[in-house]
Length: 124
Image (tube, rainbow, N blue to C red; front, side):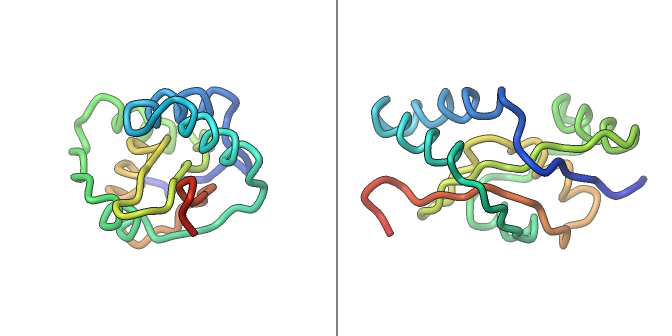
């Protein structure tokens, strides 16, 4: 299978998805601030996919998970994947892109994934 290729910027729908997810973790006002900070973030950071998973504490989804399969099929077709949206903290929150992270891990656990990352409100 070919390696994944990444878009330069997240897709427009990634930010509302991040807001929706973050609203489950924090109050809506804070979730909104985090989502806006992610949207304003212009610099891409790159982290190894294995480190993203480890920092998030989330399990690796299997390669036959429906959403992971969709992302693996995109890679196979040469479609570029959207960068991942992260919120720094302990644990790291994958605000958008968990399935892309898992698909990337299945391809190569040492792959560097482009990310937009911000710190939680009130944290450095």
